[in-house]
Amino acid sequence: MPALVTLSGRLVRLEPLSLAVIDDLVAAASEDRSTYAFTRVPAGRDEMVSYVEAALAEQAEGRTLPFAVRWLNTDRVVGATRLMHLEYWQGPMPWPPGTRGVVGEVPSVADIGYTWLGASAQGTGANRESKFLMLSHAFETWNVHRITLKSDVRNNRSLAAIAALGAHFDGIRRAECRGADDTVRDTAFYSILNSEWPGIRERLAQRLGLAEAA
Image 1: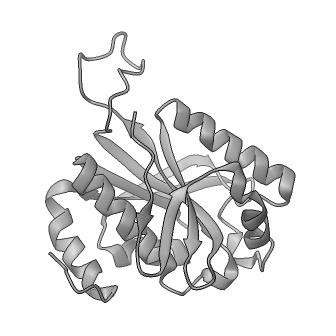
Image 2 (image 1 turned 45 degrees about the vertical axis):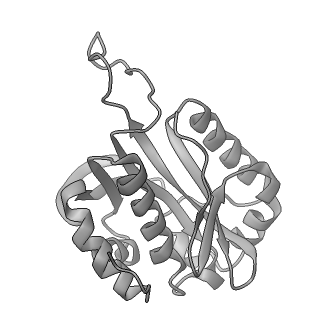
């Protein structure tokens, strides 16, 4: 099972999600919610507690690694994100097909998702640096084969942010899931492979103004 980790950047610090940051999360989610039309963001304390408890339950099963996003400019937690849908390809092939294999120390592939930020932290570079920190951890510590990112096809803001990372557009899965607005949603899928990460890392590091891009 992946170890808990804190990932530190210049704008944000990604800390293991916990019930201790509920009040900050509620405050962040209670700011202007107009950008959440296609994103499920808990509203109110009860929803936030359920949201965090569910994430921690998945973490205990080795299925996700959730983070609270601390914006260093204000030293407050302003949102959340996670490495999720962790799959482990080590060990014998699980049988029968469709059953889960052995949970290892590190995953073989993962998604980045469930990302949201309070309105005051949006457009500040906090999201881009959060993605950079998680991608770096996944590819350089876990040595995953692939990271997947996806979004509702109507969420132009999210699609632009994913494309700006340099992720490869894999296509659209129609009627992929239930949308945040309770409609049937089409989902755009993107991916980054291990072999593509060094070039993407260099470009992202330059955009973030980091001294070392290697």
